Image 1 (cartoon, rainbow, N blue to C red):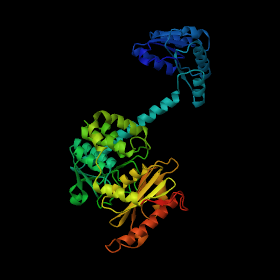
Image 2 (cartoon, rainbow, N blue to C red):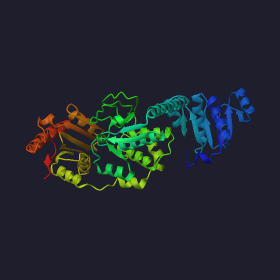
Image 3 (cartoon, rainbow, N blue to C red):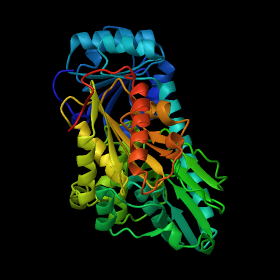
Image 4 (tube, helix red, strand yellow):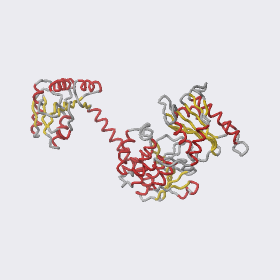
Length: 484
């Protein structure tokens, strides 16, 4: 169709073939005061339509005369159950005018393609439409049922503990904030708990700027709470709690069966924040700006600003949150200053880098802030010629590793799984992943003041070898150079 014609400017319609589908469309159009002409070859049907005060005429939609009958119509909807007749009508009407907007009914994908080829602007398949509608109704019904169950579990007690994963990131924190808001709307007191540290600069800025209150798990007694919820906790490094879990919500399948009373795991979305946004909508919460901002940032962070594994559900959740969020705060969160320790870790990683082809592996030595590794890996990925970076270091009795990749041929999550799944915990995606490996696996030693250098050498040799082997570079490739 030539020209930009909007549907709101189209005031005259023709419906060719007025069975159940055509009749339903005609009634809807008349309801909104559209001028509708109906053509159908069944005289009895035409008479019945006229009795309903509809402008209906008897005609075979395959006849050339139909082209003249619809000449003054902006939109032609060809909706008979005879797909071949629909094809003939589309072809004739399109041959007479490039300006009309033609909607045609198909019976399957093959006939849909044929109708498009002869000139239909839009093709509908009623059975597919019904199936989609049924699925949407089912999804909505399931969400309503889940929301009722979640509200019931939360409402059974007076105090709720919401536990995020160890050293929580934006998705975990945002999900906890949303569940806290849901609980408080149900008049249940809720606290957000976590283990480890909030080390990444962006994460600290996120918590501070939004005024999010979190408590260390070690500072509370879980027995003081009536209900325990785990959000975004399906990772290898998650804490094992010694009390019953009542609620478990995540977008990854858990490695541990927590036996929760209420479980909602959706691997078909890319963030737990997306799941919690759906509950916020279902409960029709008056959304505080801080909660909306947190959830939007959680989705953006987990999907790398919608560039990684983003699903329609993630996008619709983000679109819902966008008007309620504080975008000035989001900008501040995403542009934090770099701490001195992170700068030290990055400098050490640059000095110790080894490059094979476009793949870089580096050792950052002994660290206190493990979140600095992910920032170092991201910065090293920006070096010229680098498509994959991996940075590892030792903290306490654990080797921590962060990896990033922009090589479309490589799934860095799978690389780390191949290299370390049998000796440690791995979690990640195609573009970023992390691993935690008990130090004794490679060295048989524990950290002590007199063996730090030995530990570092043994660890570096083992981790580099396993990484390059998993990348398919065990024989060496590229310059194999180290920084200096």
